[in-house]
Image 1 (cartoon, rainbow over the protein chains, first blue to last red):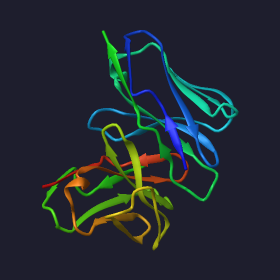
Image 2 (cartoon, helix red, strand yellow):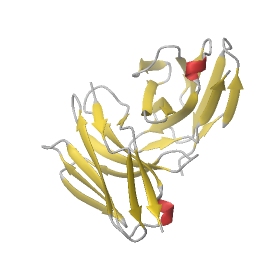
Image 3 (cartoon, rainbow over the protein chains, first blue to last red):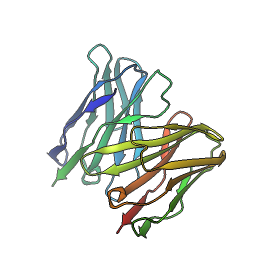
Length: 111
Length: 109
């Protein structure tokens, strides 16, 4: 089976940097994605890592270590609008075409 | 821009009713998915489809069925709704990146 672990809640202040970790256990692994979901909204895609290392997209970066079955999402220069839930999701290299999602990390950005 | 639309944002049904949730995508994606989202449990896969008339069970298929008669449309059916099916239902489609619809908040009373 598959399982992903991420913290349930994180709090940070505006302008700070926050890191949301994700560890996974899966039958096969193809890549790790991150999604953002604001209250009442649908999840939207943020980033995808298939190879080890850091991927940067503006204020957001995502890291993957395949040997450690671990990844993180790094949010810099936090803004109030970054308050949302963040989900990591694994894509497997098996016949399972669906992403498996973690239970989500609720980020609260305070002034 | 990829668009995934769902037939209703909010739905209230009675126990025992048959419920249809419709999802349509406009990007000719082969893969379509139904998830339910509950607090603290994240997104759990109910069913997915990788082609017309093809379907596969996800992690929590009990009490649900699906239909995919056309490539762009994927329907979730609750044959006899129960109160434990009160949830947010999210449809998604994917060719590379996964796109979600706005969700249907279903309440079964």
